[in-house]
Length: 485
Image 1 (cartoon, helix red, strand yellow):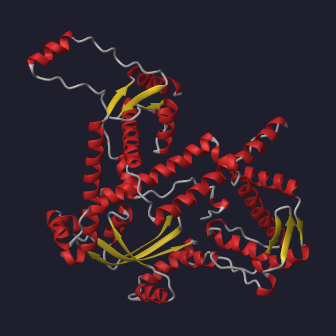
Image 2 (spheres, rainbow, N blue to C red):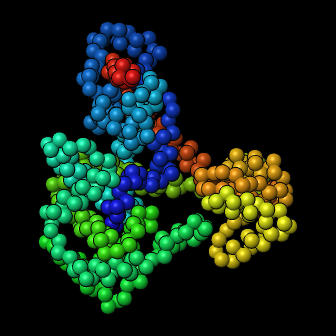
């Protein structure tokens, strides 16, 4: 599975399964140092009193906590590993409080316990997990190769005394640098012809709805089949044909598709594709994947999918979802499945205040808003919206104040000027089991998953001995406190 290099400006946040994420973030308490149980029998107390005292475990300053499991080597959580885990879990290492520190440490310990449990009961991954991992691995290696190129450019600029560049400018500088080394030879006449096909692509206009604008950005240029096999550029990477460019354009998210107006714009687009080929060539080097920091990230993803697969097979995959079980859950939580109070409105966003004011006046004419909504729906555009206090509390409150049949606007918003008419206000209402079956099943599955995963984690905790290095943990928080401005 290939991911587009040009989408890498979005942070890598592989979409985790809800259940595995749940397993990693359930805990909110802290771990305490393991204390051996003492027998109540007097002879045992006497033997313990006469036995030599075992020296307390002294951990290196770099180790925050040691995990011991029966019949297995111990595992240390050091500072570097802990701070990296905090970043991965969305925390800020430079602003830790004692409570934050212990909560994150608890999460890391649970993750390590789950990973060891999964390693003992390795199970084949689902096909979807395998495909997701291949995409993640591809992304990780691309990022590492791209980071190397950025580092090379930054080093050269520092040596020349030049200023630092932001990420977008750095990407352009890296592309231009590699193009100087690659020296591609372009077919200028073909660039003009193909560039004209891209220039003819229709462009969104302000008066279009968001759906219409999105649909336009997904269109492909109308390139004749006879031109697709022609060579646009030649380099040591081989021939780059029109069909290669179209394939790259098709893979590129519409969010990142640039506006191509002429042959120069198309030349830059071809250079982007060649740059991606060069980066992929670097990413394919075995030495890159063996690099410790890269191997560690890949190992994290392998571990994640191993835990996911085993949880699915051994824990949540055994949850019963038959009708009687789900019905019992529905009856125990009946009010949770009530249909919430909601408002049905016709909502429009317009760029200009004058246009919004004109539309608001039209909406005061009986049936005008409803007619507009019906015509738009026939054209594939939806102007009717159901709003609840949960989906948009501010808008819902505004709608309630406006009342049924009322018109509000024009109001300034993030998407221009807003106008709406209230069609109806519906109160909260109970729903039958048949109506709420899908939500009840999802609620039951989620709550039962949480209970079972929580039970598994608690069992793994009970089997483990956890040795906290209290001086090192205190120093970690004190160091962060001193570092704050």
